[in-house]
Length: 336
Image 1: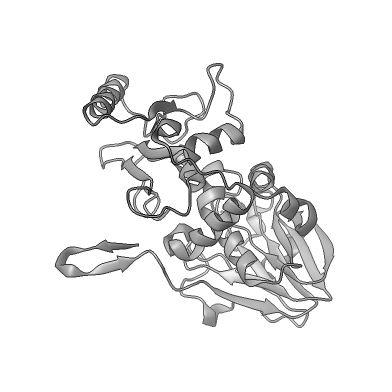
Image 2: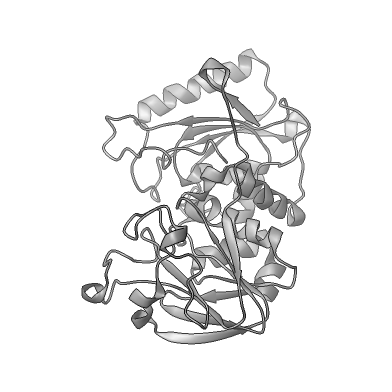
């Protein structure tokens, strides 16, 4: 997929893959949280959520990614890998994993949307480049477990060790593979990372709906009790938009059902993942304001035969007058 830019320039959604390295047996990995000992940390804001810093190092003390390998200084939020020497004192326990392993800990691993578009694309990429027996060392959060179990329950049961922040994991009898993204927002790698994730999802969820009567047009509303970070349409404005959508559906004889999706049922409970998946796998069109609800577009069918079958998406971006505006690359799902 290419986007045509002014002057005939094109920007591809396929990017150069992230750098990765396989460390020798006896190597270690950890992700740090300074919340309880901020006064002792070089960077006291590190919290294993939105300020993510990890370390990978060999038994001999060599860093997976040292200063010479980095484009950003240690305090830059885009830099994930830091020297273990500055944070090893935070270690709460040590765990040994036997055999080949790969590790990743990304931005906001407790959040639905960020797991789907800022964590799992890298997990899927690593899964695509390591042998099938490789174990995965991943963040011990309920959201990680819930979403990965839905995507691939066998993978979670047989190949994943969920580790805590400040837990130092040592890999014996095998290599430790880690990757260095150039951004916390790994979605900026486009198809390079999202293609393996979409294909992985399809392995266990191959549903495909081809008839217009089986498809839906999804309008994502943020007018719900679980909404955070604003970007909520004014109620009358939202109703006006829905009226325009219904009028267009009638004008163009669209056979789909219009589904107003908030991520919750009529009683205010979060919808089961199965229902969220089914809604977006059936989608022909997705419309709504930027937010984690739109991250569900990762469930859409990954193998359209042409542009007519490809899901269309209209995302409303918050303007500069919005109190909680987010600037690129935090404010859009164009890469998903």
